[in-house]
Image (cartoon, rainbow over all chains, first blue to last red):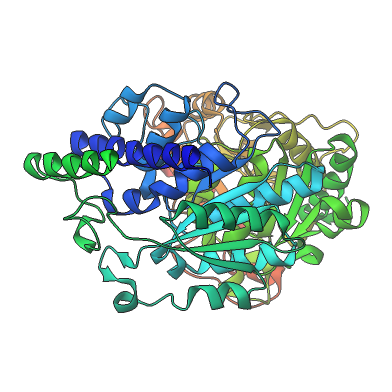
Length: 277
Length: 313
């Protein structure tokens, strides 16, 4: 990847993390851990991969994105705001009464949100519907879904996986944000969804395993997915929950908790330091 | 009067709609022979999508297809469409108010021999709680066909409830006009009003005859659209006759009876007697025998109505 592109993506991902945290801090509620782990993937999708136009959020030919792990909404909102779908100030007041940005994505109220999600396991099914609809109508748009690893415990994910393979949805890419943690602890302690890649392979998907914070690997994976014909692609992205904030990294406790004023200041300091690196 | 199941109307109407709307897609969950979506599948194989035995996924896939500007009919038995997939219907279809029509066949105890696990007497109650969900429970083939056509023309989620059993066709298909959200006053009467839905409408018409033999003059209203319900018509009926008897092939908890009481209680409270499936599960048997055993007959409506007259002030 060119140096300039890499710098832009890193900066964007860092901005996503800061804005998401600001919104969560202001609301005193939200999910920082999984927002931070997904920030690099979201930055790449919206600033390098997808054909979208914030001026025409409903354009029929646009690429689609479904945040199946809907609780990472703060990161999606920050991404959409940076892309120009709505003012950044909206992100700062997410989850508050009267605000546009709901606790989980609401397609009716928020430009750029292609599907209302939040109830785990459903986003990937909706993405299958978008991809299958493109096949039926002979349209070229691609559909992307982002799932959590804990979310893979939902049986519906595998109903969708079966569906996508059966209908040869090569216009669908599911990214698994494999940060290893869910609310009650380590995914392998709660009710292990592992092995992830092997499961998708067994469901007849094309599988690519990457480091979900390495933009070269992210770029290569999405490029490879475009070359796959006849089957959907799963990108299993190993990530760090709470990525970028020292005290949040790999801590399940930060799945769904807002930081105190002191910790928020420290978190922003961590992220700003990364920005300057 | 010929007998025909309302699910037959579902299949026949879908085939007509396939011609009219190029953006109409039909889904099923491995029950296309029973739900009659196979009629559409044969005519338009490219726009028929079988999700297999995975109703939750089917509902959300249907939602995803609807976001791309399609009219999607998602079909299964009522038990699995409204029951198993409730949360998918609520969150993925209801909350974003997407253009998905849920074609739920084999509703109620007239499913017959399959028994309690397949006899859904709770679907109307479940669907009524979802904001913005339209619920239609047609009474015969002609009404069912018209309802499916109307649902396709309406932009938003609709729950269509059909039966397995062939039931009398009392509406004339050629002339029947269906208006979503409007009850149909089938007969005038002084003493009470029977408010019925689905296959119980025909029983209500017969119950009126039975009551007439005893000198009781009953009005009959067909409520095909349970949500939004025709409040105006029901309030008027309550004021005119002072007593309502509801009749439905559904639990008396949360169904038509409940909806009618909610509709009139603040404006024209009068006694309401509910004929329906009591707070119990169904069982195996022939459909007609089950309807008899659970009191879903003209005779029982008439008996309950006669008994209820004493409640009138």
